Image 1 (cartoon, helix red, strand yellow):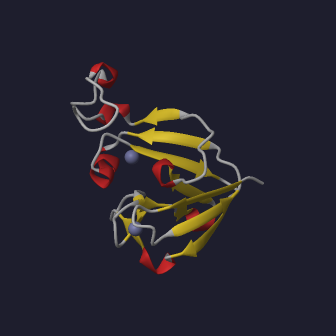
Image 2: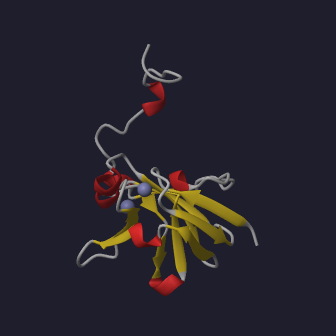
Amino acid sequence: MTQHSGSCLCGSVKYQLEGEFHNFFLCHCSYCQKGTGSAHAANLFSKNAQLNWLQGQDKVTFYNLPETRHGRSFCSTCGSPVPTSLGGGKLIMVPAGSMDSPVTIKPTAHLFIASKADWEQELDQVHQFQGFPE
Ligand SMILES: [Zn+2]
Ligand SMILES: [Zn+2]
């Protein structure tokens, strides 16, 4: 079993995960755009992982959009997405950006591309800086 670890932006929430990732989905649906404030969510999925909160479990807030299967967990201090246990723990969803250990799996697929943000086109042609704009 591979061990993975991660944390939120403020460091209140830390977790460890034992298991393999089976999918890595970039979801462009309108719920994920709202929930991330960006073009898409980037979530790793595991069917056999054991999720252990190392600290800050009391800061983890779960939000389920009423009458949908859309749900996400986040740190109540800094708002960062953190892992979510779905289907009574049968599926663990881990935000790729929350990982501190290396993400070795490549994205599996883009989901809901029919809902893509209007501005999400040819992004690799936009001017790039190493850090802040010069
Ligand atoms: Zn936090
Ligand atoms: Zn989505």
